[in-house]
Image (cartoon, rainbow, N blue to C red; front, side):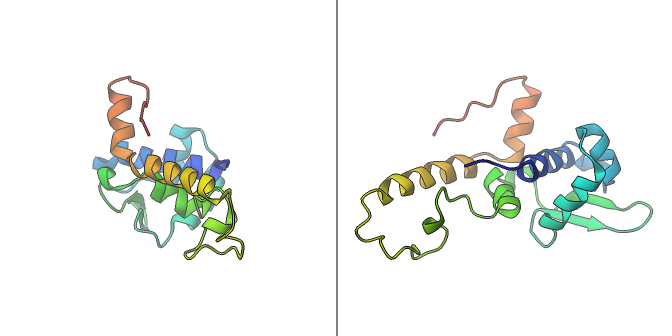
Amino acid sequence: MKISTKGRYALRMLTDLAEHQGEGYIALKDIAKRQNISKKYLEQIVILLHGSDLLKASRGPNGGYQLAKAPKDCTVADILRQTEGSLAPIACLEAEPFGCERAEECLTLPVWKGLYKQITDYLEGITIQDILDHASQNAPLNFVI
């Protein structure tokens, strides 16, 4: 499983918004400059995040973007699901009930279910606030599964 640049940059963008949450709505050009990401690419990411409970937008001269909820309530899993789709390592785990006609006799399905659970538990356990807290302490992110 690979996380695309859209997922990675969305996490950086939302973390940037959290860092600057006391400054009102933040223009994409400011995020783009601080994060060294093209504004055009951030516009594509905003489209993916539009309508989610992660991002609010405001138009006009003082418009821009803000987190829609507190950084402690934004998990990495939420962000990646919104930008990447499913976190499932194989297609048959993307829907409940599992979408494979071989699921009942599949000897390897428990391996993939276990991996999916580890991925989900890990990413659900990290919030934007955790990222900010670790950065302020100059400590590496060291989460345990």
